[in-house]
Length: 84
Image 1 (cartoon, one colour):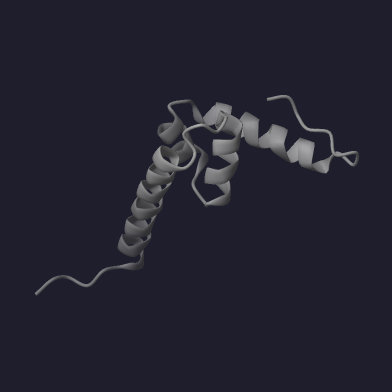
Image 2: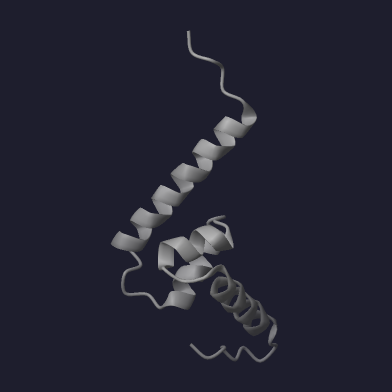
């Protein structure tokens, strides 16, 4: 009989599924999007900076910086966008 799954096992499998779904979304729907848009989407989907970096072929530091730029731009009262 199979050993029952622990919460850690379930969490790991859900993270793997989220990663695979994000990868498929990038291939099918976001292939023409800019990197910053992809980072924003994947972050909202709940992926970690490390996972986003792996998917996009960049570094976690780049992802962190881009998310910071996006948050700063969202806080600007006159609606100006950050540079792409």
